[in-house]
Length: 508
Image (cartoon, rainbow, N blue to C red; front, side, top):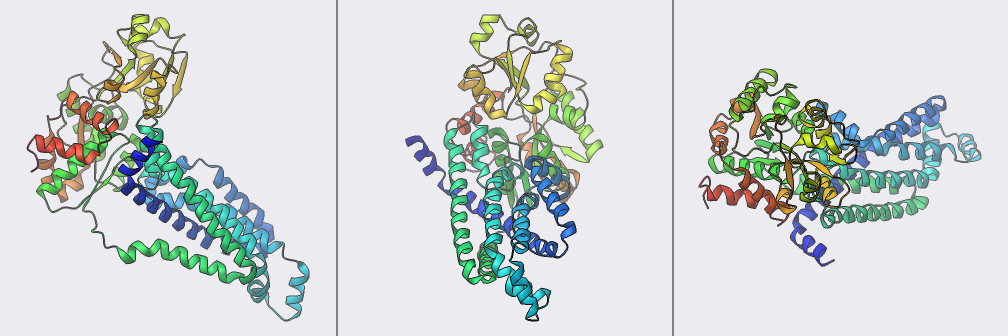
């Protein structure tokens, strides 16, 4: 408990910021869902033949995994709040639509006939009789939708939309840090409970006031969402730098930001933790971000879908640089010195027990071990696919898991080998053994800034500024910086600044 309180005290500022972001995204999605679902539900009560098929379509939309919806929207809307709100709105439609339709349909027919007998037309009967009576049912649907949206909003952090999901993902990435996970999960649950309590109050009042309480609720929600526009005047960013999940990308983008803002008047915005390689690359392609740190080996194998022509760092970089420019019109600037290559790692106890020295040695125990690989590694040629082909491996039990979980699974004895990154901090913390790769399956993975050609044409001085990191940062320096962020809980910006000051790249 004491440790949780300590984490809470250190991260109060970011907690308040993420709660506000979570509330904003949730309310915006709810407002749009109401604006779509309530009128549509009312229209369907007049055209009952098409009602069930349309409600059925909205039900099908809820069955689609939220991560798949977000991935589908990225090519069209980029990353950030826009695709998140579209996805959340889709998830929030069904309860409101169904309750609106049901609430109106179940109004006592005798009351409808009486209203018609008094000379009311369809619209007047709807506004004066049906809506006031159905309003508690409609409000119940809004409550259900709100709770659903608040819970699902946590996953929006995967595409840079912010919210409490950032803290949860950070906790998972840091080896299932329960304190960070709880710091995101508890406020998300409390926010859902609080909003449900408020909406329940509007639901009760609606029994007396009818449509007026509904309008009042909408106005309050719109004011909350619009308040940042009324009270803040944040300077628009000239450049947006994104990053994959993990401490290393977060440190590197902070270095980019500090260098750029030190030598120019540009305003730089950071979007860390954008998820896996495909998400971040799509964001760069469609202009949602302008720069992100990529690895030379990943550029060749994943983006260009080629095999590295060499195992020499310079030749791999040249292949990546030329290929990215020719295929995508992207510029890969000078790489840093460290090589965050893939590795197959295990504990010293397992390595000694089975006399494991190279990846090929796993052949003799492949039927008796469990491997813990990330989804990305399992599906890549410079990963398990290549291990199967080059080392003739067929491990009996392969479990896929998030990067931040696999090292804990190894230390807990749940798996026997994992894919690892050479510069990761857990290599130090858990004193892991890496198996040799004599067939050079894993090409060099040197980190380098990747940006579109049009960005460099607009800001040509970026090349000189960011190339100051070229050839710098050794494997050990990167491991130590990752360790400071992951295990000493230093902010990535602080670690980045300290390194740049030590190297004389920015003023102290």
